[in-house]
Amino acid sequence: QVQLVESGGGLVQAGGSLRLSCAASGRFFSIHAMGWYRQAPGKPRELVARITSGGSTNYADSVKGRFTISRDTTKNTVYLQMNSLKPEDTAVYYCNCNANTGISIVNYWGQGTQVTVSS
Image (cartoon, rainbow, N blue to C red; front, side, top):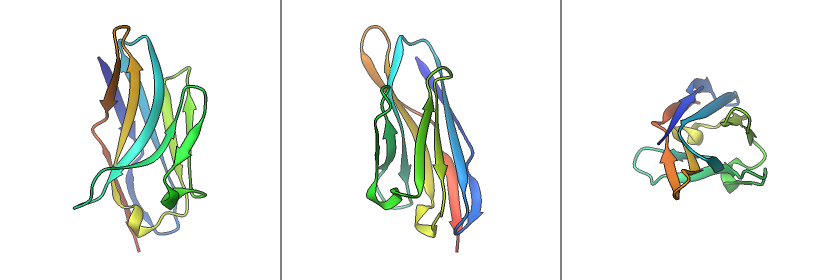
């Protein structure tokens, strides 16, 4: 079982910055990719950014050039630096990871952290 604990959400004005963190803990053999998804009211959950164990990243087009995902593999922690925030970035942000439990690869989700960007 893997637990994901997110932090760093909050309220910020348009143009501001926030940094999200997500730490994975529990019993697992290794963690493969980690990432952030978001879900705005009335909309489906969407990928924001993802980083593999090898450091490869991919981003949603809407956040390219503004958001940066990074990872500390020694701490099993992933970060999302969000700059130049826009009101349309308002959503609940969920941390995600693919963990090797030693038996299978399992997908885990955090509980979510609210990000609100005011205009």
